[in-house]
Image (tube, rainbow, N blue to C red; front, side, top):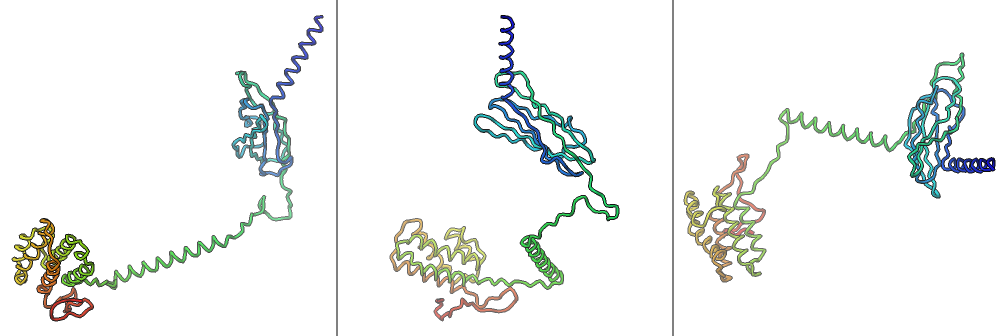
Length: 329
């Protein structure tokens, strides 16, 4: 009776251990079994275990002899049918001719719900490291033949083009610096139109817009007075855009050449003020008269001749003929 009881316990324990052992399996391997000195040795540990178990990375450094770890890659974990596989890869290398055996490496793990630390052992792995065959009659050469890198013509063409561009840019800036240093830098002539030409062109553009004919009376009077005020600023150096009508007329009195247009200017600006600020609606004839007055203000104050920055005498010209009445078209 006692013997039968122990037999039952032994069988149960054996089955339990066998089932426990099947929960995890580990395998170690190398890509070859024969290497030359300096070759990379790919050593792999593969761990298969049930999902939910916690597996710790193996520690192999203290177990290695005659080889060194060159690189340790990140583990790769894959899942399939409720089980997981963790792969740990190492690149080793040896520099002496010898036979090498990597002993069984413990892989620590824990079972879900159990804090006890367990381990499983890998299989030992053996391989051989050999030196190169030496020909005493031959010359000295590298362990491995030099690798020939194929030419990338697109890359070469890019660098050639870059060198050409840099050389051209350097040549251009060098010549420019040299000419500037010798006083040969070409001077760009900027021709500034006379104030009356700018004003007359602006009046022509305003006339072509036909603002007051399309009901935009206030806009028409605002633009026409702004043209004349800007003309005063350029022609007589007065801050006309910032002055009231009375102030502008008083400032004009400071310039002798404005005498022919003072009364005309006062009437012109006063009529525009009535439209802009007093909501006065002028007749069409008044709007036409405003344009005539603007032309007259400019024409009466055109200088007899203009002198450019080189001291040459030029007469007012807009590319179109000016008749004796003073209208420019």
